[in-house]
Image (tube, rainbow, N blue to C red):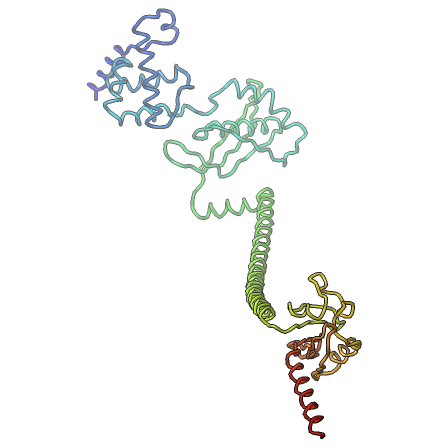
Length: 415
C-alpha cells in the first residue's frame, strides 16, 4: 500500500493538463493536441455509454479525468486517449467517476440563506399551525438537498412559532445503510449570547413490523392521505363503471353486428333468388318471343281494359297495329273484319271462362277463325284475354266448292 501511494503521488506530479485560459494564452502545438485528445475522449465516452458530457463544466471534466490518470499512472490526455482505445473497460470506470454525486447537507449556503430570508416569510405568512406546506426538490441526488430543505422549513417554523416541529419516520440513506428517524426541531434561546437557535434532533426508530403498522396507522390518520384514498376509490369506481359500460356497449355492438350479418345474409339470399327468378323470367320471355315469332297465327294479348299488351306479326293482317300502339285500346284500332260486335265478344271473353269461336270474313275476301279465350295468371285470376285469328280461307273455299258442286249435282238429277 505505501508503494501504491508513492506511485500515485509521483504520477500526480508528472500529470500535465492545460486549462482553457492557458491554451488561449499560449496557443502552442501541445495545447492544441491536448484539446483534440479531450474531444476524442468525450466522443469515445458518448459512443460507448450514450452519455454526452459536452455541456459539463470544463473544470469538472478535467478533475474527473485527472483522477483516472492517477489511478492508471498516465501523465497526459493523449496517452489516456490511447489507453481508452486499448482498454474498453476503462470507459465504464470513467463514466462512474463522471457521475459521482457531490451533494451534501446545506451544500449551497447562499441559496439556502436567500430562501430563508426572502421566500419562507411569504410562504408562512397567514398560515395556521395545522396548515401543511409541500415542497418539491428536483435533482436531489441521494437526498441531502431535500432533507436540507425539510430541516430549513422545520427550523424556520420552530423559530417563529416557538414550538417544536416533528417529522416522523423519515427514511435517510447514509453509508449504504437505510435509517428510519424522527426529526424534531426546537427553538432554543441562549441567554448568554442573547440569541435564538434551532436545535434539530434525530431519533432513530425501530424498523419492525410494529413500527410499520404504527406508520400505517399514522398515514391513515393523515387527512391528505385520506383525501387521496377517497379520490382513488372514486376513480376506481368510475373506472369500473366505465369498463362495465364499455363491456356492455361492446356486447351490444357485437349483437348488432350479428344481426346486421344475418340481415345481409338474408338480403344476399333474396338477391340471389331475385336474380334466379329474373333469369328464368328472361328465358321465359325469350321463349315466348321466339314462339310468337315462329307462330303463323295472328294473336293479340289484351288486358282487362282491352288494351294491347303484345301481338304477333300475323295479327297485322287483321288489325292495323304498329309498335307504338302497345298500351292503346284494341277497340280504337281499325280492322278488316266484317264484324261490328268485337267489343261485346271481348267483354264476354273477360267475364266467361269458356272458349268463344267465330268464323268471320274480312273485307278483302279472306276468312278467319276467331278465338277469344281468357288470359289466366298463375293464381288462376283472369287479367285479360287472348285473341287468335287463324286464316281458314283455303278451307272455306274447299267447303264452298263442295257445297256448290253438291248443289249442281242435285239440280242436274232433279233432286
